[in-house]
Amino acid sequence: MNTQDLIQSIKRISDANGISGFEDEVLTVIREEGAGLGTFEEDRIRNLYLYRHENKAGRPIVQLNAHTDEVGFMVKAIRPDGMIEFITIGGWIPTNVPAHMVRILNKDGVYVPAVVASKPPHFMSEAEKKAPLEITNLVLDVGASSSEEVIKEYRIGIAAPVVPEVSCTFDEKHGLFIGKAFDCRIGCASTLATLKELQGMDLKVNLVGDFSSQEEVGTRGSIVSANTIKADLAIVFEGCPADDTVVPSYQAQTCLKKGPMLRHIDSRMITNPRFQRYALNLAQELGIPVQEAVRSAGATNGAPIHLAHDGIPAIVIGVPVRYAHTHYGISALFDVEQAVRLAKEILLRMDSKTIRSF
Image (spheres, rainbow, N blue to C red):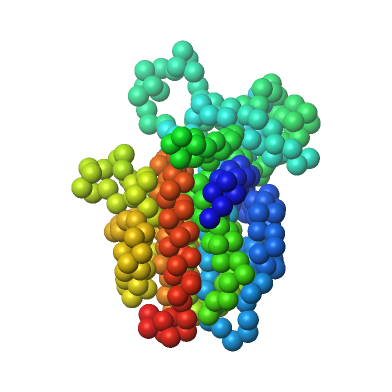
């Protein structure tokens, strides 16, 4: 595995801007990172498909899925004083939003820096200070003093997409990334890395990289991609919330630097038990560290994919991300490498007979 290539791929894809429905910049980077691996095709909901050069007719199809969108915001209205009201795109906790920098895409295609602002404590009543924070109490401030200035000078209008102002960094000494959108840009990089690891190899299955849109607003892109690819088997890569800092150690199932997490269940999917056991047994046999999890909440693109057609056996290989759905996440290179390694080893052994056994 080319470690430096993987690090740069994660950084580039993480830094690309793309809330749900506006993933174009992300797709451009993925096309560049995946050049030479196969043929790219794009549909009208902005799903991007990568069909491996080595695919041959008549083989079972394996869908390698990861979503390209990130949580963010959208401009709702512009007040007379130049403050910008917004809505959330994807799941945010209001207390994680204020006092951060964001980028607003203007009508000229330029990202304008802004601050997520709230009423200063100096001007708040005691009741206001004690009240729960609501998104409607927050505004975006580009430094303007009127709506006319926002519209004419900054060229910002309603429905403009807004993303966190964050650049991904890598701590080489500790093997850690800090950046935005690891849910699921780390999954996108893992999909590409898996395809690179298998480049030139003659497999018994055909591989399709599925970089799907709009996961954060209801797994919408993968509903379309599952119907397009019509896969026989699916591996879903995900940047999944790490729990090692928020629950007792005996409950922690998604820890940094302990390998990828394979969930048995979440709110919308019971993972195919036979495929799951196959993956876990293979990991144990090869000494690949993995974590098992039982989740009562959350969901992934595995939800619509495993329900498509006659039911597609699917597993989710999750890379732990501390503080997902905030401006800054933390993830470990080790976990990404082990996720790619597991997917590669599964695909090297996969054939039609094994798929039928699931």
